[in-house]
Each structure stands twice: as structure tokens, then as C-alpha cells.
Length: 196
Image 1 (cartoon, rainbow, N blue to C red):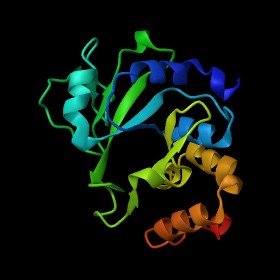
Image 2 (cartoon, one colour; image 1 turned 180 degrees about the vertical axis):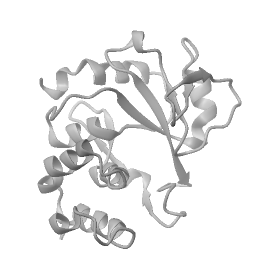
Image 3 (cartoon, helix red, strand yellow; image 1 turned 45 degrees about the horizontal axis):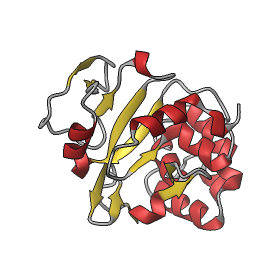
């Protein structure tokens, strides 16, 4: 399937049409957009918003209102406006019946004009404009080095496959940035050889 005919990405675009703040396609779909093709099947679509914009999320997504998903069990519970959600563990999900695949909203930490990696004790940062790429038809998605940084922790087969699919597409600057963020924490990480 061609990336520009994806029902899932069309559903995300429609869902976020009236959302006034920054958002990004994340996860495997972001890597598909970077590669310019659908590389594998996806079970859901991840969309990242800034945690500081949570009030706008509450104002925009009212019918239906997304639910809070427990990261451990996958169980959902109602989300009340005003309830604070943290970058990392918390996610909002929309009812599966509304879209071709489940769409979940994840939250990113930020500081003024910078994205902040919530697992990096605030030391891993990048300007918001630099983490933002756009598909030919304008859909915003996370830069691949950011997506792969998150995926580097898991060791899941699909994360390793995602890395193998796009590693050769990374330019030297993106490769160096990712290498420099993985190597200090995981000096034996299997991706480092390919990133050198």
C-alpha cells in the first residue's frame, strides 16, 4: 500500500484537523513516512503532543473524549478534563470503532522551544523545529532519530526490524546524533555498529 493512501494516517489527519497546537505522527508510522512507504503492518497509530498543551487536548477532543490507558494492563478508564497526564507512561486512546486502527496520544516533555527526552533527566534535547519533518502532503511526523531513540530501549523484534529498515536512510548528522545518545547508556547496544 502506498503511504499517501493509508486510511490510518488519513484518520489521524482528520482527527487532528482542529487541534491548534503541535503534533507529530510517531512510532512505526513516522518511520514509514520517513522511508516514503509502508514497511510493515501496524496495530495502532501513535501521535505525540506536548504535555504542556494538555488543556488544548481536552478542549479539542470532546466527542468522543479519549480514555486514559494503563500502560501495564492496557485497560482504559474515563479521562476527566483537568486531570494531569505525564510524559512517558500516560497515553490517551480513542475508541477502536472510530478509526481503521486504534489511535493513541502520547505526551512529550518540552522546555520553551525544545523537545526534552523524558527518560534522559532533561539532558537530551532538540529544538522542536528540528524534530519536525513533514510528509509531501504536510502531515507532521517525528524525525527518525527521535523515534529510534525511543525504540532503542526495548529490544523488541519489531524495533530492531524498524532500525534495520531505515538505518541506511539516515544522513550522517542523524546517525551521529543517535549514536551519541545510545552509546553512553548502552555501550554494547547492537545498533551501534551500524551507526558508526
